[in-house]
Image 1 (cartoon, helix red, strand yellow):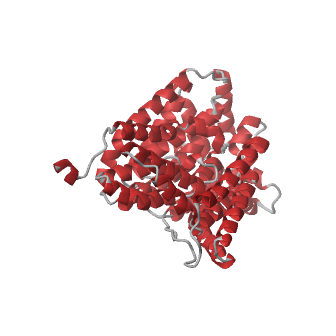
Image 2 (spheres, one colour):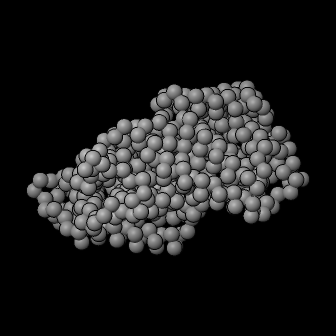
Image 3 (tube, helix red, strand yellow):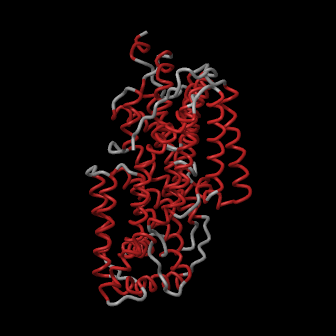
Length: 492
């Protein structure tokens, strides 16, 4: 997923864009996205946001054409931009099938069942954050955590009468903390490579901003849990447990796909083969242990063999459908399939088109250079780097570009100010990696919303860690706290 795009304008004969021109497509996009949310609410990502992104891309293309670039050049940049998103989109489709197969196999119902037995509602949010943090720390992947443990915790929260939005915030907070601090994470390796420092120096320096941020987040999740009003009584919870055992075979064996997937992720197997392995293992377990549920899903079929084949096939492309008669459980267990990711795919493609045109026409570089002109101190440099990372997440819709682009742009400025490069690598992660799931059309935001079934703007206020971490980094910058100078500067 780490793909570098050409950062130079596409035509040597084209005029460089002005700052005013750079702000025009951004202003159009912001206005249209604001109207999209106002008019369509949580459905904004199901089509309206896509139109806003395409409109912004069209305006950026007109600016590029006005400056001397041809449509062929702009079109080629769009194709390149879409190519960057191909691998994340393939992962999305695979995760859609994974979710469906794990529900059909009883893997997700089993995780929900044991979560309901173990987790008390008052500590559920904080415990969810800690669980996701530990698993992400061990495997280095926030996406894997959200697509496995995350969907079970979302289901358990609904069964307990808790907020799925806060639960999603806790899952994402924990997953991104673990992802950020894991030496197995791709972004954790990418940031020091771009900045020019080593991995474990980078991780050690990140602890100063990351640990306080996750501790504050855990305190907030604890207060949220203590103040929650669980609508489910003990009898309601028992009804849910009974419904799960009536419709699925609940057994520890059903957790085998989770174990296999986490082991493969820990061993750094490629993501797509890892997810597919978990998917097909789920299908095998479903065919052995969950035959009644599959046959019920398949409907009419010549015989049992074809019913099982049809049900498994249907689950992979359109998700599992449960008809237990209980509306709450049915809505929880009717999910997954490749088709469930089509809207997310549409959103990511439109976002990558906008980012590619902005980058190719030089408008993005113009905005970054304009931001550098305001830098006057170490604090403002770090704040500007963070703002640029967040802006790159919004414009390019890719967390890797939001790490690579600002890293390359600001490296010389950090050297001029005699700042150790580990300050830059930490700042890139404090903003570029952490804020990516907060943007609905970013690949990470789209993935989290599609996987967890909670709209990005709905869970955003509860991603406490992701919101707090950039603020802590900015405060450190202005206080000059834990900002390390270069060895030459120390000697001087």
